[in-house]
Image (cartoon, rainbow, N blue to C red; front, top):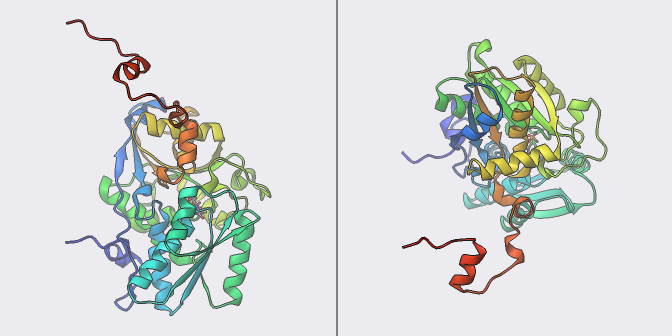
Length: 363
Ligand code: F0G
């Protein structure tokens, strides 16, 4: 049977019924890929580390899982406009699901507010080509979120940020997929934390799906050191990090993230930009996998806490790679060993052999 997305697959866990119009782009069913090199780098014996490739969702991030629910429910209640603030991925996803609603004959416009100058170009281009009205704001994500929250209270426009409960509900499906595929629950989830909706959703998902509370994973969340309000216990007025996706100083789901941490016996820690970039290079160069810089916080965090003795040997760990590496080609180029585009060579075989340091085999 043709796969038709997360809502139909897991409808018994979601607030949908036969009347709910399902706005889907066949999101979900993302690969869980073993990461043996990263497992070794932890220095802990016998770990099974997997990367959940959420960047392989239709718009290249985990946001699609929540957006299929939020837009379906918006259409169900008759909304014709949606709005969000975003560091990039939410806006791309909202724009795509609005387009999908139009494909099914519903009137639907999408408005997105993004912090000017701090959104990776791939994400901005997505929101634009999917047909959203993109407003660049001279301010950060937190300021943009305050504006869209207020607008959605005053005007007939549906908010599709993760303060919309259907977003969190939809994002639980990744936890279900992990349990289905491993045929048990992992011991730890390592996950980047920005606005803190995703860690909240995963914990809710494991709580639904794993009956025995002691079998549920510990939630290990990681913020960027320059944008770590939960770790520092204070709002960060001017968050800064290379992981622009998680450049957030006042997360909307702050309390829920703490609850996920405490109920699961987990932790929320921070990783520096250097640690994030080291993990980002490792994921690409030593595993052949890809993700965007903010996603690498999960792997950087795993390595950090494993070396501090906070991971039991012989355990199973899933690191969530939340977004697609192709969204941010500039960081990829900057982090590569070769600045390929900077130099060109003559189309001459001998010259190229010399550049490549190749020596002829004696016959
Ligand atoms: N990873 C990526 C790639 C993200 O885009 C985000 C959030 C996160 C991690 C953090 O998830 O906010 O649920 O804790 N991006 C939002 C956006 C803020 O607007 O695209 P979170």
